[in-house]
Length: 70
Image: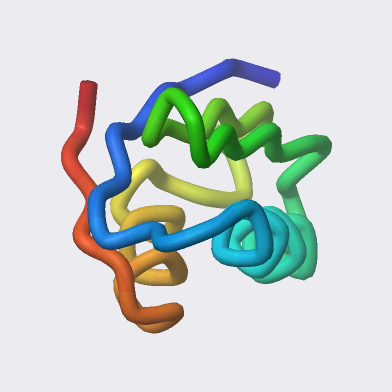
């Protein structure tokens, strides 16, 4: 398992952060996701044998947010 941080813009409230966490945690290979509206970032712990950082980025983009690899 590795941890990766992403900066996320376009979040408007803590519900946005919850939506991102739920979408990421639905992926097989994601152990945990901690998204902070206040910090405008997420930290995802995932299995690099099952997912790439680009897989994570695509899920966040599909949810409607702009994401930057930190």
